[in-house]
Image 1 (cartoon, rainbow, N blue to C red):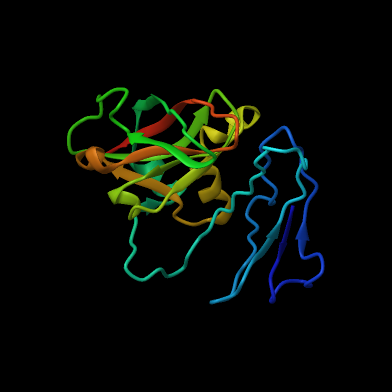
Image 2 (cartoon, one colour):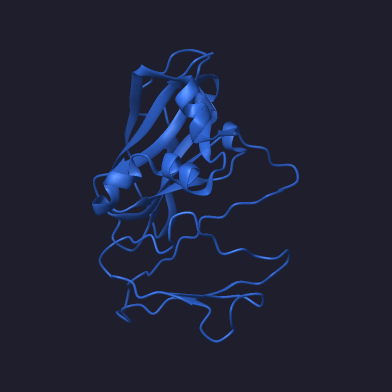
Length: 211
């Protein structure tokens, strides 16, 4: 896997990593980011299996300092610790049904159950899945309809469950999404699929926040 950009270290190799073809891998060291200049073109290359029908994928987690017209709700880890009602941690569980390679399986977070307390804020700590997939994402009014995603590897469940918390601690930034149950009818789950047409069961780990 290789990422090249004009402002990078060099335009021959740039940032290159060896990847495991059977597992989802997080390739950046905790707290480190590859900064990109405005209007800069990224060149991504993936050396795949070269097998007919295989779909190879790279996922990039992007952070924008300023994205005009887009304003999501996020908190940092310190605020989470101040506001979380520890006795009321809970999950949303869903089975996502994919249709084709790419972004697929979108469904409302209420499709499997509708147990969120009315008009309350919840911090999204992370997401886990029982079947490997590229990523599992959440999108809705509180994320300004941008996809906030977690790696979909089963072997990464130990960090998938608190992915957003880990990111917030590593970067010391407000990266933990906050959703309000009043927006549950416009908040969706989905995932990134290859050619295998899977239907993962996912659990969204939530913390009820004090008013």
